[in-house]
Image 1 (cartoon, one colour):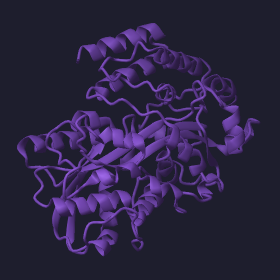
Image 2 (cartoon, helix red, strand yellow; image 1 turned 135 degrees about the horizontal axis):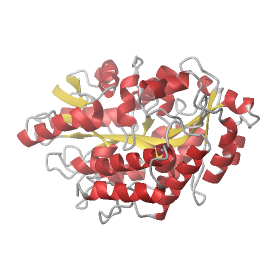
Image 3 (cartoon, one colour; image 1 turned 120 degrees about the horizontal axis):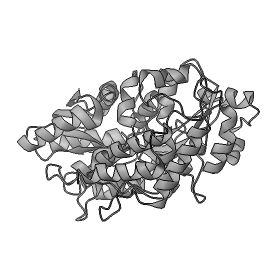
Length: 428
């Protein structure tokens, strides 16, 4: 799900889902539609979708859905999907991770969901606007439906904050950590040298700061943004944090990094709401009540950023487009579908009517009774959309190298920027 890292995180969760279907908000295709369709995705969306099938078949008893997962959204899955597209031998339905959207959306192999029998134009205003922008081509073609997003925040350990004399209430923490200067100043209090750090990696800072300024890896004309002042400023903040001992030595998504959460070695983490699913079910399973969520530190008063997202479309080669449409529309708009996906995987719906649902707005015991949607809902409403580019993955790799080199003292900020630019330009 995520241009930054969500695709690597999904393998960590196990899914168990059940419950009756509820009426969906959008107009549903006929329940008499029948047929068999294939769906391609990546872990653990494959388990998520498979677990939803009993509920789906209550609404559509005559549709059989065969789900197949391939490892990681931007690796084996992407390669298999691209090969299948070229040979017109792909599935009926395929998911698209946000980081791969620009690479895949212009392919002619997607069915145009504007057209009958889909008529998706009638429902697109019910999704978060930036997700609609991501799936709509310049000529108006709609290549997929938005599935989930990743509104970001600052997850933090209440007990560690209390230990060092910092406030623990989310409102007070949000006020104290209002910007990135405050994050450095106050965050230093959480450090125990070589034993406890504030964040896992500098990318968390860079990703949030760039998004808050509305700066993507490339601009709308395809120009690389590594010379933008906010990229330099964010790398300077990484250096400040590293010099203060705030950044862990663990590479993100490694077993050592994952274990640092369980060991209480990381006091905060800056990712999308989906990261809560990893804390609850994989990284910090015995820390219920110790975590909370605050608004992320901000730039120029903007504290919102997106950290993830996935979409689902129908291939033109599908021989059962009506069944495929019934499935994807149900998946992304049906209340029970979205409820189960959220309750079992902390997947935040792109479908706006779900924002008022009780299952999304409740006092979560894992967060000490906090309703964390009070943090995430305003973020989703206020964030600045990414400008997506087919070379995002190349630029992201170069950016991560630059961040790591600055954090480890291998390069100055200027050296890191020039090296990152050269790496991307060599691939353009």
